[in-house]
Length: 211
Image (cartoon, rainbow, N blue to C red):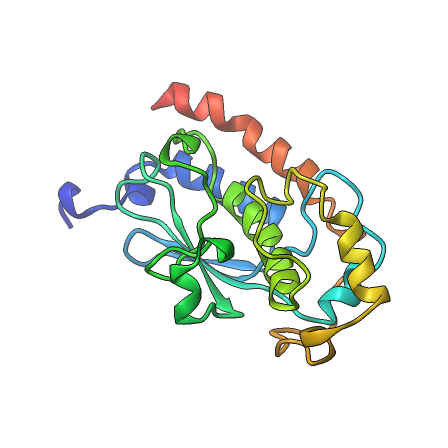
């Protein structure tokens, strides 16, 4: 195999190691697939955010989990990976409505603009945003919000109260929840993922300095 045919993770093993460490700390249920430019496949964490999970989160999820595919391109880390929700899978019409934060190709719209990706972040940071997207997807599907938040609940706590209210006063679509992608979901307090991610990504500067 010539050098021109090698992907980023073959040419830069230190960068791959950083990606694997960050993802293992955040989302151990995502499995690395070393094909082409590489991807991750599996279940996203439930609540990988720095603040405590709202009371009633597990009741809102009702055993449902977000199944993802995180796909790199050969241009990584210059170009951000793309994230697809495999289960639940957004409907075709939702790709044309900004409220759902889904791109036309079906991938999730997790960055406000291209400048939000600097090339120094691991793909694990996008999984954090995707975990928040899933919770907002459930709230929007139930008709409890009119559109997803612009910042995302990973950093914006404005929907935390609504998460608990949704469990205490079920209505509409919540009475017939989406098909679960997994059962036996662990407690969000078991995650503690944000701490490990920060430790794992602490190697970013040193890796970049070696490149």
